[in-house]
Image 1 (cartoon, one colour):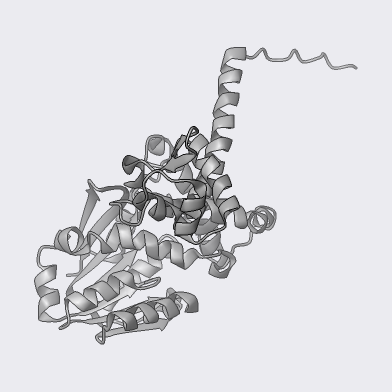
Image 2 (image 1 turned 180 degrees about the vertical axis):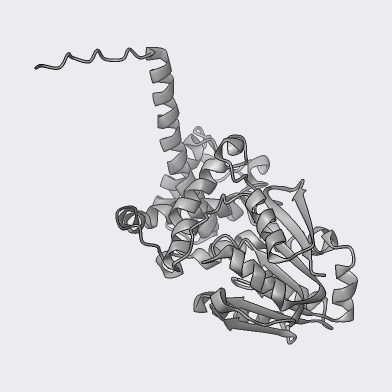
Length: 361
């Protein structure tokens, strides 16, 4: 028996057109984001911020780059409303208001995060295969990952470390001055740990990371800083077991990538001596999708989760909690791990991250 034809559902033509415009805008902005990464990595934004309105040839010469490529990049910056252009004189400029969030001398360089957009494009084929197989990835699958993370750390951790972050535990700066044992678990290039080692020469600092590349960078950075109270070592922290070895433990944007975040927190708790402090930074979104509709850069963070944080955990045989595992999840895990006093902080200068100060009895 023939089935009756299903009548097409009528659509709101105006809404459909508006949505198509939104998608076209997203594609355009995606292209701009990739070129923001190019501008950051080539130093073009830093160069333009120091120059008066200039020709493409002058900008290219100052940046020591090929003019033809610079000119094409500038066209994206102009049409993307990042840079300005004077067609009568052929001059390009980067407004100071734009340079403030696109240069290394700015207070918050958002161009750093544009590198993640470019990285996702470079990894697309790898991740598409994982969509079919369900397997995970390894850190080596991601180009320039540790460089990106060190630049992120310089802004979110190292910059505010002494004036804002360490004083979240009121007694911590004095204890560091007096001399204690400190661990940074998942230290990446070790910039935060090296900064603390320089500031507090009476304390002893250890940094562990899973990746040889990260530890090599950390050792190089520490050597250049002349810090002698500092030790870096490549180590898989899955079976980390140094009971009662430290007075202060830090993790900066490192927990949700772990194979088993809950077990990892238990091991960090055991590693602390009585009265020890654990300072944890992680992404401050909610565990509930509906609560993240207005969270800063939520779509970007979920994309990073899909391309990196979730598959990295799965690649270790882990649970794959992802970037947006949620501050509620993190807080509950800290308490389950045995920390008796868990304080949650969201800082005015950094609404994307959450900071937990937890203590061991």
